[in-house]
Image 1 (cartoon, rainbow, N blue to C red):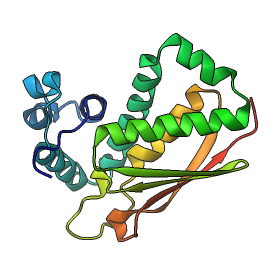
Image 2 (image 1 turned 180 degrees about the vertical axis):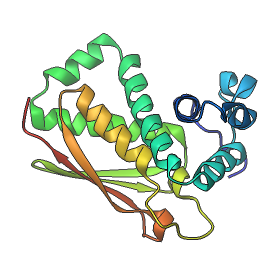
Image 3 (image 1 turned 60 degrees about the horizontal axis):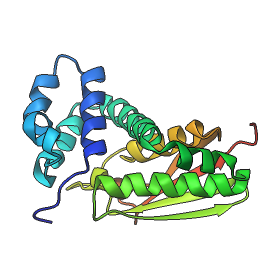
Length: 191
């Protein structure tokens, strides 16, 4: 894993979420995420792993930071799409739009941490989103709560931005000793 760099959207969304949730601690986290490395897109695995470890030690605010960061990543990915691509996805029939948006979410998650693998299964209004080798779930000992808040928030916000309201539930998490991370998605029918 030497030489693995963390994607810019992931780093920037984490940094912004930390600034929003922990304004008094942003200087501490800036040491690991900020400065020239963030601008260059050269934040490595070690600094990001340290940040995640420190955030988990903060307790419950970890989940708020991760959820906010996932929402920012979805918003920024949506905003960075070309107008033609955005209109193309919006014009698709609902069932195909769900598939396209979940593929976009999977691409965003994989861009954040290259070793991550994703698999999406869709059946009617239900979908399952599997994440293997998640950066957030790299822990030494099993945790008491699922650590996949970033993924679930990103998925919900990405679907919302394409007028597909949804609810998600984290069914499995590698960080809690699950075989992989699994997010169950229920896509609403209201449009």
